[in-house]
Length: 178
Image 1 (spheres, one colour):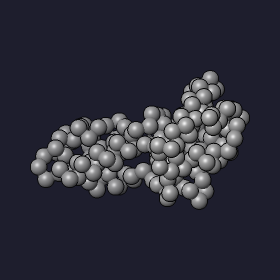
Image 2 (cartoon, rainbow, N blue to C red):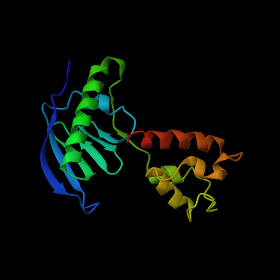
Image 3 (tube, helix red, strand yellow):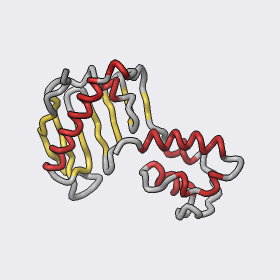
Image 4 (cartoon, rainbow, N blue to C red):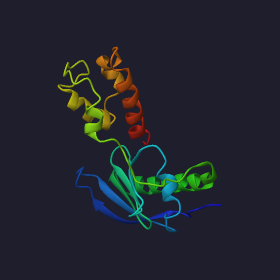
């Protein structure tokens, strides 16, 4: 059974975060209340607020926020790209709904790791081996998928094994959505 017939493009706004790009606002053919808890368990979730029934994913570039009756996508090139992304989102929602019996719905709030969560597990040597001036700058690049953990040689030295394992989970959870 198909959950959504589609998501109609209802409005275009200028994107303040990225001049020259747009924000696309879409309206689903039916409310997303029932499917959002399943989508909230997918990788790449930045935030799930069950009380407000809002779900935010990272997309490259930009973000995608789903509400029961609206969808917002930032940093879109043009209306054509927006329509294509709304179609792809419709397909992803329908696939998630179709497999909901194999999934677990989110029962509580979720958030992606914060920059400081990541930075706290780095060696904090500011050795520049990663190509960044500081470990904090490296953490920023990790959260935006501009760097990989493998770019930090000290993380692979003895003494950082546990930190590396935790960082791999944190970074993978943040980067899985494209």
